[in-house]
Length: 373
Image (cartoon, rainbow, N blue to C red; front, side):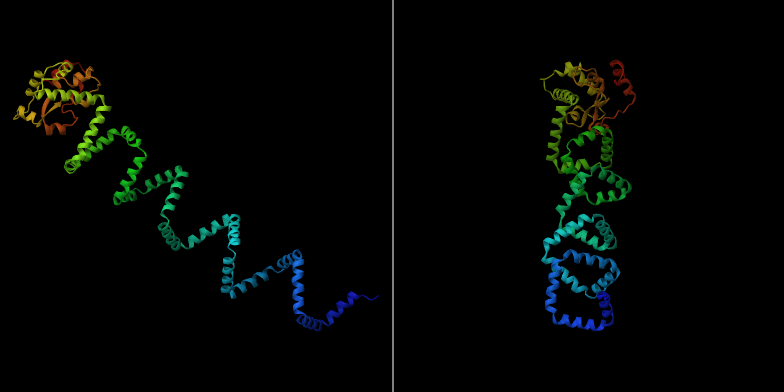
């Protein structure tokens, strides 16, 4: 029986070159028509073409990749130009494609970016410098928002860094006094209660530090008063008003001090203070004359060269009204004396005789005997 399939196979094998030549010639003669036919066939069979290409790629993957690599090397510039041109002509597509790619390859892109930055530190540094210069407001807002969202972590990091680099911060503060002052003033403006709270918790330490600084800078306060008299006058006035309003002890002392001073200057009105301290103006004058330093006169006192000093400082007594027991002790005739102005100011609230402090807790009579001259 005649087998047509077997016969054709045998014929093609025996006339391979002749068939190939005829086929080539036929294609040349029908090039245009064949091209149209293939184009139509591809349009009609997209799934079949995709399947064929997939199969071919699987079977010839290494060969295809090698060919692509070689082609890219030979035509790199042309390919890049063509790619750039295509991207410029299709911006919407590229935008969507890039967005989708970034969403699908987050970790991969992070790794690539990290690797690139490690390999190009100088470029990264220069770019960062230029970006900060061109976008100060944007960076400031970003840092502010980041700090707000990560405040706990940032505070801990800052604390740790300051502990590990104390010299750096000391040097920075020293070299940038204006920046430090501006930032501090701005912060205090936004946190008005901080200073009050801090002073309450650290009052003794602050006072000690102030005394030490004043001792190390003896002429500073005097120069400030001389250079800014109006400013210090207004400051003193405001301080006095605030102290009178909030400190009962200060108010009582201030009132009794004014009343006594007016009486000593010859004012016959307003002698109510005598009933509060249980002695008269004459008793006070006798006491002050008795304690007057050598080579001084009553005129020195009236001119302000001598001060009335509390032997046991007012600071040691606790009272709010003239009826309190410790008010009587504080303004006791035997707790008052005259001292040169300079000596009294330098004495401040110190006790020159510590034994007197113990007697303060006892009855008035032994205290009077101890203070009597």
